[in-house]
Image 1 (spheres, rainbow over the protein chains, first blue to last red):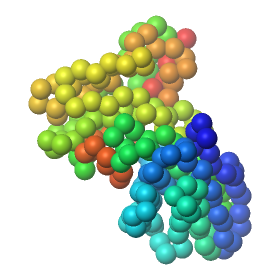
Image 2 (spheres, chains in turn green, blue):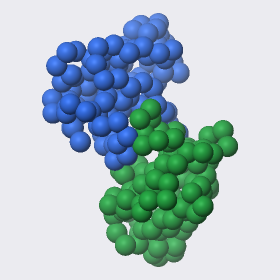
Image 3 (cartoon, chains in turn brown, purple):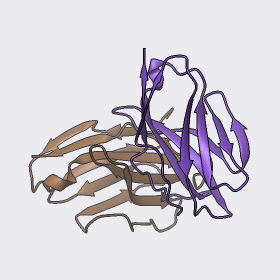
Image 4 (tube, rainbow over the protein chains, first blue to last red):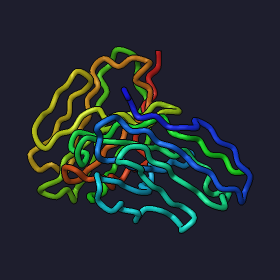
Length: 114
Length: 110
């Protein structure tokens, strides 16, 4: 596609429920990243996929968070048993290499846990 | 990854040139300097990247002194639409764990 697409754009969920956030990167981009941005804060790295290599999951805050990337394209970030502190904007980005000339970000999914 | 320091906020008026300086005293030899712009309710957008001296594109210029311990993003003749948060990031080419601080919140006034 022309840009990075994320869905849903907004998600309100009850504490304890599971949620899935979707990212559709730019076609041909081999690298895909997930970041989290809390209100008024910078971006927090979560996970990185590069081609067929094992993902770097070192930024995931707890084992309630997981992500997969199917067929080297679409990625899904799953948060199990959501907590109020999970409320944030979840941003996905992709790049054609390792990020030499910057990432292209999606508009994010605003997650609110009530 | 090198830590960066930039002003929390800046105000400017339409038509003025805006310079945002970022300090990165611990920059490594293979580190590049990259700037992103973020509007409300959007993801950050790549603006410019450089290694040394000066880089210019259609959006901005990036000035990097010889010691590379700081850099300055220059936005010529800003407009209201340039109101955004600007992030300075430092890391090797291909870095994916870029550390995004809180950035500089630029407000352009009419």
